[in-house]
Length: 289
Ligand code: UTP
Image (cartoon, rainbow, N blue to C red; front, side, top):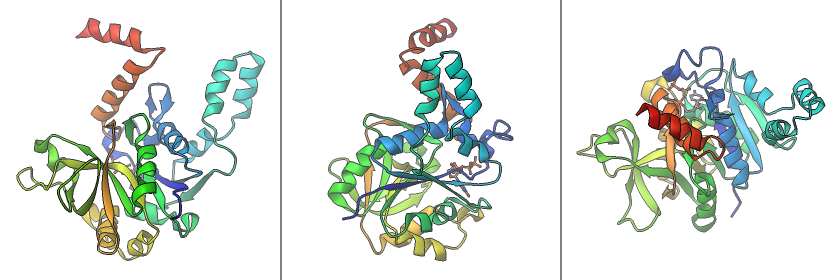
C-alpha cells in the first residue's frame, strides 16, 4: 500500500461568508490568535508526516505564497535588533524548500474542481485534502489520526464529527454500511444537508479527507452540481461504487472559520488555551460576562 505523502489545500475560494473582511486579503490569512488560518492547516499536515503540500490558489491569493517564503528585510531587521524569539516564530512557518507547491484554479468552479487542478502534482498515489477554514483542535491532530487509520484500512477516509441531530440540515452527513463500532466504520452513502427526521446519522463531514487517485478521472467527468459548482462530494459518491469509503470520527473539536461566528469562537477557544495569553484573556471574558 502506498503511503499518504501529499496534501491538497484549496485556497482559491472568494470567502463570501466573511466579506468584507476578505475583500482585499485572502480568507486563509485571517488571524487565528497569533497566526493565519492557513498556518494551522499546513503545520497540521507536516506534523502528520505529509511530505509535500499543494496549495490550489487563485487571483488575489499571492500573499499566501509570500507568507511561506523568507522575508529578507524583515528577518535581517529582527536579527539586527536581537529579536531572536520573534525571528524564530516567523521562521517556524517556512517549509523546507521544495516541500510546497502552488497551482492556480483560475476560476473558483468548486471544491471538486480545485482538487482536480492538483492532479498532475499528485500523480498516481493516495493523498489528503484539508480545508483551511476548518481548524480542528485535537492532539494528535485530526489528519495525523486519519493517516494512522489509513495505514490500517487503506481505501478512502472522510473525517466526521458528531453534531446535534437538529442541525443535520446544515451539513453533509454519512450513512454507516453496518452497525457502527468504534471511531472508524465503512459508509454506504453521504447525504447533503438532510432533514433531521430523515438523517442517516448525526456525523457531519468536516474538512479532512484521504482519497485514492482514481477520484481525478471521476472529477473530470463530474458535471456542475449544487450551487453550479463541481462538487467533490459528487465525485466521491461515484468512487464509492468502486472502492471502500470509511468515515473516521476523530478526537477533537472543529471550528468553521469560514463563518464569522465560527472564526470568533475558534479565536476564543484557542486563546483560552494559549499558555501566554490564556489567563489574561479569561480574566477579560469574566469581567464582561
Ligand atoms: P468554502 O466554500 O468554505 O470557501 O470552500 P469559499 O468558497 O471561499 O467561501 P464562501 O462559501 O464563499 O464563503 C472550502 C475551501 O475550498 C476552497 C476555499 O478557498 C476554501 O478554502 N475553494 C472553494 C477553492 O479553492 N475553490 C473553489 O472553487 C471553492
